[in-house]
Length: 162
Image (cartoon, rainbow, N blue to C red; front, side, top):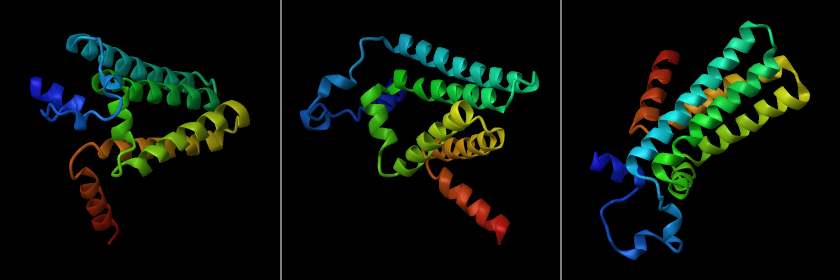
């Protein structure tokens, strides 16, 4: 469990100050490990429940716009749940690392476009298109945290197409 805790916190076991950067206390948290796990689980489950509520609103014929907004809100809550595990600074460093910066920006752009199409434009077709693109971007972003997962997906798609 300690190894998992160190990996999520970005601690590689070094005690020197060069690894912490200029603002070393921003990554620290006052929450205990068990509280952080509980908060992560609560936010992640809440995000899933909000996404399910979005599906329910769709089945109750509340419209694509309400679905798009609730679905996006569920995704955002689920993404923010990881802040409890890694801390906000470490999470931002990982999100905007060179290997996943394009995926992160794509996810953020799709979230904004989904909300714009659902709240202001209120175009169901456009909202649905952005939901699909948001799901694909979130999937690609999530795969970036699994070693060699994106390479495996690329090779699978290439094999299916060729």
